[in-house]
Image (cartoon, rainbow, N blue to C red; front, side, top):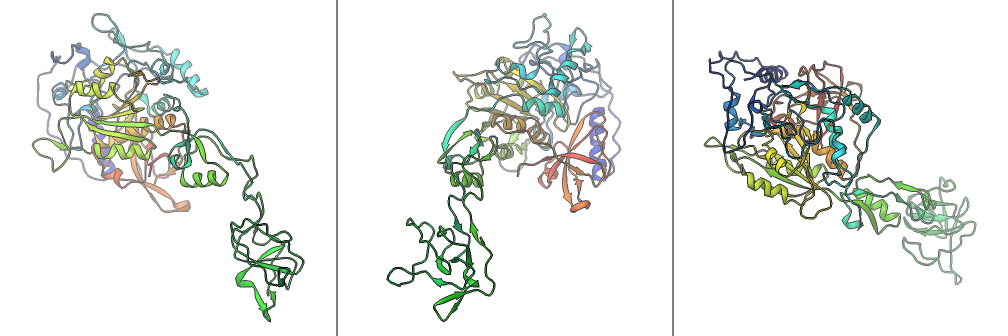
Length: 579
């Protein structure tokens, strides 16, 4: 177990209130300096040197960003130290992929491989731009069809990055992993909204408005009754309005096409909710408040005030008023408002199409764990999670550890977003990064300083099969809670960008208990709301390890705990869950 593993375990135990068992002494093993898998890839010795510490998922503490270079604003970090500790078995674990109890762990390892660096022969890796390129600058090259949308903070961060020289690791520069907030910003700026389309109202639900909805008419379009009762003229008492032959006029109903009669002072006529109010009406007298006098006259113990229970024309809006801005999700009330305002169809940004690829030969998809294999927890979860985030999930495919099947699935996709589970590292059966290099993809994010979920990645794929836009790929670590960390960090903001939705501001909440933190990285901790009003607090839940789902299955949100932890009474940002 690495030093960082021990730290994360201690943090989880501290949060759960349980005592940590005393570990047995580490066996004295011969240090493994170098391992090669000739049938996999010819990597140099540095690719497998352990870093100064590993996180709970087994990857080195500072994995590089590859292909795309550092995100603006990141501070280049020190490369991994050469050598290992006595008893360090990381090299041997690469062969098994570091399976974890909750789900696969192969993708949670980082062997220190770096796309975009020089090979031993001096040639650059395929598709590697310069290390000072901003992630958003590659979107046109990646076929996303958009331009960068820099903000003031991004420009400032970019200037800072250009004036910060990367530290050297041997003869090659290495860039540190992104902070959590930087990774979220990179994903949010990685793509422009998908092309808009005009669809009928019955096909717009769940999409995003691409154009503002303005009123095509006044609402209501004429004066209407708000209640069942009598339309009356004057203070009363009143007599029912009559026709020329002396018969009492029939009541007015919603949808009557004939013009209602003019009321004279002292007259009344029955009226239903939603019916047009006759000219001359001063108020609507509710049915239960009306009394008959001798069967011929009408009075009320409390006469209505002028204008009572009348909805005047244009009370809600006037023609041309702005009703809804672009970027609003089309919900059932949005559909109702658009229909009331006169729309038959609306212009929308379609839901991004997503495909889930579940990797790992060690996964079982039914029954109990057996024969060294474990149940797949991510396959049943990631698709519905993406749906809740606004994607249209077209398929969830179980690929196992098959490099050619992975390449075929990624290169042949028609989805806007591919999400893979596991396989994000550089082990002998981790085929994701070789596949991305083979496709000349751009790695926008490789490694995030967040626990759990450190080895997540984001890549931009070039257009395939004549498509005008490229796709994006989010690589999730194999541990369940670590994978959810990748979903909220990279997939959620990317999907919002593709759907044309604004990135929300994170609201803050007050901690009701101490949360231990990592000394350098952000932690995402499942929490539950307790109390209300000024006593409202959030309380961290147990079972928050990277391979655990028990905590997140019963939590209300994920607390964003800064490096070093947070004390009771401290306000921390919350990532709301999409349900």
